[in-house]
Amino acid sequence: WGEFRLLALDGTTVNLPNWKALREHFGSAKNGKSWRAQARMVMLQFPLARLPFRYELGTLAEGERAVASRLLAGLCRNDLVLMDQGFWSYRLFWQVDQQQAYFAIRRSAQAHFRTVAKLGPKDRLVEWRPSDSRQRRGLPESMRLRVIDYQIKGFRPTGIVTNVLDPARIPREAWIHLATKEDEGRLRLAQGLYHRRWEIETSFFELKVTQGMETHLRSRTPEGIAYEVAGHVLLYFLVRWLMVEAAATENADPLRISFKGALDELLDMAP
Image 1 (cartoon, helix red, strand yellow):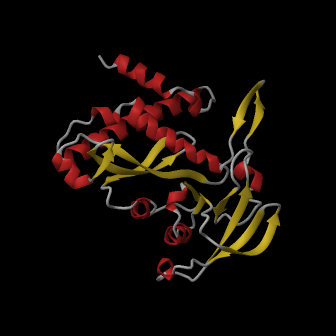
Image 2: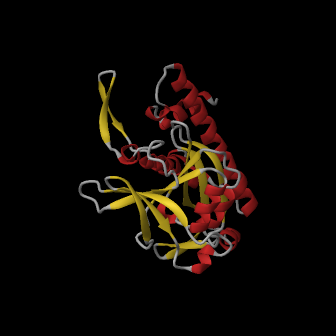
Image 3: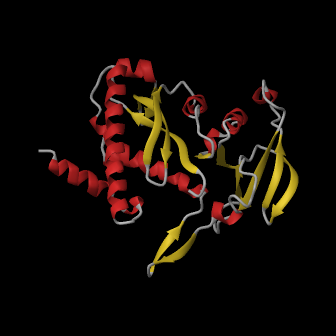
């Protein structure tokens, strides 16, 4: 996307076969009146093609931010990571920034900023100094960020927080617009940059439901589950890779191709 390599970061839970060994290792969550085994999956993804990049499958006891810290290690210069609000963390922000990479995340209502400069309407530079000193331990006392405030009709006011400070690199409108543009006589939805983050939610649905990962896991050991999940992620990656190649031959958008249709064609060829 422009000069940036675009990534999305998010987590989900994966329902597992309800064996005692899996509940003891991964943890369990209440499902109706009973408890069932679940694992936590956190993934980095290329949202413009829905290609998985890195992931970890772990226990419910370990928080998503701790897993994210490992996944974000080794980012490249000019990587731009779109994060779910659940990853709001002073330490994670500094980790990304120190790798000369960038992030964007929805503003936390609990965070209080000091405005440093106005960049334009509803676009400002701020200084953020977390009130909890534990978040700043071993790090600078504050960091400079950019806040882009906006409101979609029918929804509460919100904002995007990023360390892409120069509005010439990514203008305010590019972050948030939701408009239709004409493309060869057809109207299409032009998403704002931050809203591309939702592509990873679609990937989780395609992986768990469309591809059937949750319903096809059979192992009774943590090692077996990790092996099966890796196989499903690999299959998803390869199908998506073929979809990107197919789209490239037609100069098309790979996200406009049906994942279910592509998967069904491959399964029909399997015999």
